[in-house]
Image (tube, rainbow, N blue to C red; front, top):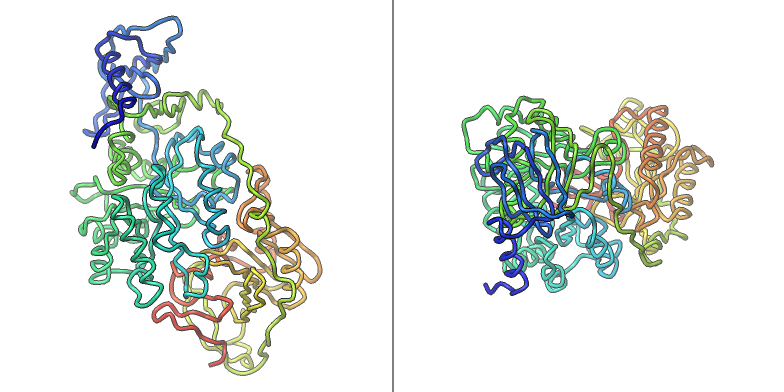
Length: 577
């Protein structure tokens, strides 16, 4: 490949700096450098930086400098590459991009790869505005083109076709196509054909088809791998981690707000295997966890707290991720020619960033964020996605046998059959309604068992992989209040009792995101969770339960405005038995 002359000229300058023939613009002295390739912590090292890139890493020398050279004395502390989150959902923070960045920087994360979550809601025009907002930010925000793996074809109306992702794949910041649910990729018919087309185009561009293998094993996992998928962030047991590593997957252990897997897979680290395809990722962090625990830094501290050797832990959030995405020539290590992404911490065992640098610029130092994220304005149409006036309540059965979604955990469900006339069977059963937010008037009323709600109704437009609004409730008055308020706020989460709105979380950008300060988002989240606990809901993160009732990512039975959907055969089911 022909290297553009301007790029080669920059490298010649770096070479001159490394030889000592030219002064660096930044010199870091007296550090213990972590070598991501060998896993060594090497004392007495310095790093010379020019124009955002590393020119030299090695023993301390008298670096050529001028009066304007920035000199940073590491005072013996550890020098790490910037952390790299290889799979996240920025939308999990429910905030604007600037707020997300503000609270990620102090933890030392300098690169993230995010899914473009509001796919199918924003439309192609809105998605382009969203990814454009990633540019020119103080940290590196990379992304994957949205796949939108819906439960049934009807909820994929806004999904991109293979030809439509070409503009994304031509963008250097787009690393491929986003997580492809294994059951959707292997399914026969139109849904599977579309996703296989997306994967094919991404691979032809030399980019990635990112994976999602929850529940797959054996021949299904092998067949999925044959289609070019090379990563997975879904293993939840030690055996699942090992199976994916043995098949050659870049295997991401998830430790974030969706799930925390490290404690249950920690036995993997006692095995005498090669860990270079093992990665630590967040899969997304919500406002409460982001403010009270941190971001990928929290995941990393948890990993270190399990006794995992520091060199392996740091490889899992730097070079391993970079190698997966074939970006190790640019990021993931402290080595000549790479971008100057740097974190200074007190010791290998104590991950507590004292200084963070991205692209050669100090962005955090001594407890203070030194930069501001670029402010982004979005067009009005992205705030106008809730149109449910005229949607009528469907018939609600009061007697006889009905089909229900039965919660096994706060995320996993099973199909149940109950008799509404049997007090024991119908105990803890509430209405579950899904309605098309785009004004078609289509709506389905089903039932949910095991949520625990004793009074009122909870509604959300933050639901995964759909444009549906979902409302759970004990009575239709409360449900109507929730629906009306969600339309007034242009989306979000609302808990109401009768005609009274008890707690709410407005998210007007696509009915998915808020532009308010992160502290406000945290407090609103806590108020909703407290209101639900007071009214009988015992599950942790109960809004996550309602938001995942619409996704094909989690077994076994889900809901759409067309009816229940059983994942094993994608059959649309009525409430009637």
